[in-house]
Image (cartoon, rainbow, N blue to C red; front, top):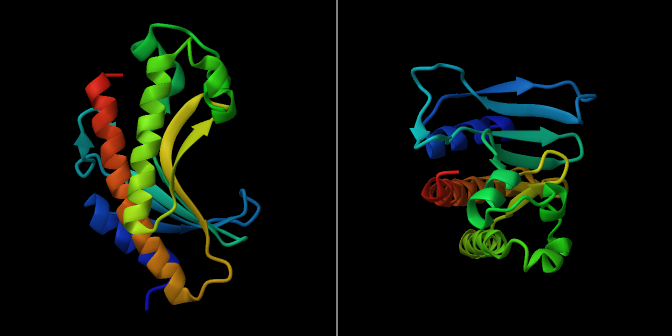
Length: 184
């Protein structure tokens, strides 16, 4: 059986049809111990419209595994496009504040709730851990996977990673299709 980083590399290559490499990272760097990153080659970069389908994965000392996209959406641009308004993105990035924004940015909230619902459906289908992450600090949003492998056997970790990469690829395609339809 492959190591978890090698398994992640192979899964990402199969899902994204791009070459990946494994990098060991020092533990003091946000506790990351390994990363699976795209091999940089302009000839090999594939685009789905204007959104890149490039993703990466990382494993941390505490057993947390993360899969994330390279390209992230702007909450401010989304709000301007859907509601023609400016709203402080840090408010939009906090789901607990959405009820107070209901009248100000109804189309944006519906869009985000719809994609949340789609991700929940994907999670049920794959028994996965995909989420729509709202970044308060940078006012961005993106689909990602986050789960803990600590307490799981190597086979269980590999199987869970496989389910999550497949689900993430489906969620990322849906994210890109919806973003492209908006031309944000």
